[in-house]
Image 1 (cartoon, one colour):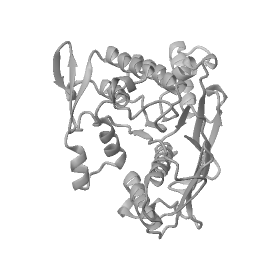
Image 2 (cartoon, one colour):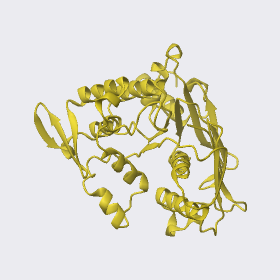
Image 3 (cartoon, one colour):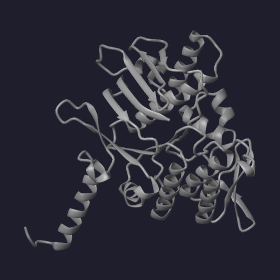
Length: 353
């Protein structure tokens, strides 16, 4: 689990430090404040941490592999690592991540660097649980053949899409290894979507409902999105208390309010079982469901991280709080408040003007 990440001169960040809680972390902010970049940076370091623990190669090879990993996740202009260095910054770009087991991993580079400089503290040889990153777009509609195409050709998809396709295409874990809450979550999803996604291997996915089988492409996109979560639980790619952090970019996109509530209930339950979750979102309703459904009596912990641009120098900064209501820099809530005020004003007509 990640406990802290500090980004310095990395992409658009001057310096931002995030303290994660071990359960649910929600990153919010306007467009252009770096939510996805923060999510990918944390995922890059988490997956790097896992590769360091399982690799027996020398340090130069590790640096080369990690540089390639970062490039494939962020896809910088002209495929140059230096393009991820903040414009105008004189000192190195640096990403430092601390874990709850007291280990620390750091990589740095300059605007003309070709490879990362990698360093760490603690026992990095201990095996690190693999994280999962679910990107904004669902992938069930184009999984077939995607991984082989990605390996052979230059596609306009970052590596999070290949990673998730590989995780979804794994075989199901043994029934006796499937946790009770995972079974419950899968059943909840299948009930709401009215069927089950069937995975045949090689990326072939269909949807089965009432003994009839259909192409996954004709199923609603919101159903395909929650179907990805069900499959990740089936394969054991997500196992609370066993696997690494779940990163999810805009899980609410293309979900109706009913699906949103169900998804929040599932994520809260998975976090209660020991899964660390980091989410980036734009949606007020999705945020409000967390605010309403989280329960201290059940041990829930939801931490909010609001990214915003400083009005004076335009630097990206962060406000962090354990309560949604405690955030002052909350563009989503402010916009919703403006919407409500405009609605009231329109209904009142000229009254009070």
